[in-house]
Length: 381
Image (cartoon, rainbow, N blue to C red; front, side, top):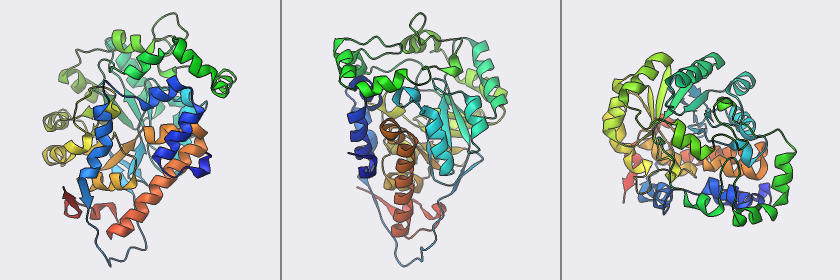
């Protein structure tokens, strides 16, 4: 299979599986516990049907949206994800460049492998920063100050990851950063030597947002140790309110799943929330974001921008979410698999296919603008 033979998410997933060592593929593909929430995230979209309108004159279609003050040419954006240069040596550089080509936002993680500053200097499209809350309050303030100075537009505080999820696929292979693979995991690396050659012949793996706080070489803190030892499970609403005030700009909570929490986020000054269960990687058995979308929009949608991620693999998924009031939709694995398979050309192909689907499907829906979508064009089974 070649990149040009990839026409949808499952094709990219298959190509990535052929090219990646098993432990790394399963790190991307896996989720928590029995992965029931992971599977439900996409299944939820199948329980709602679109009702198209006809004869509306849809030659020109405008897919642009404004989200937390940022103008995007597409109603989807690249959600922040960790460890991207582990999947392909270009990592966030490829994703940021592809997102810029399509005029949309991209995210950088605290566990990102390219610095905020480099990406902000190179690219003009909006950038959000996925921030984790640390026990060291001074570290939190320093990292936020750094993001301010870099020119990051949107702070995106992750609130569903105060501890790591139970990802059993990683336990079976021994996957960790630094690498401490078991025999099974090592064997899977041995049968995919191209990845290893590529890994050792390019820039050394690093986490520049946390250079002085986490050691990826094996002597100090692993990624698992980072979640266990450095993140603060005592984080509360007062802590977040202080962060919102200190940031003084667009501030979003990522991982909101209840209407009550979305309302509270608006009350402390947040300008957005992302309805998300971290792609099913944290609390297995939690609701799918799409199942919660209408309830949250009804409770808080006029007070802040409601976004959604987890399980989005089709343009029709995006349209269904927009119809229920989401202002934009984030994709994660949707671009990670093509990144792993083919670098920037893979990400560009994936984003292009998504945009083509949305334009085509809006024409079929009889809509020329995003604001013409609404609950009137949905029917729940």
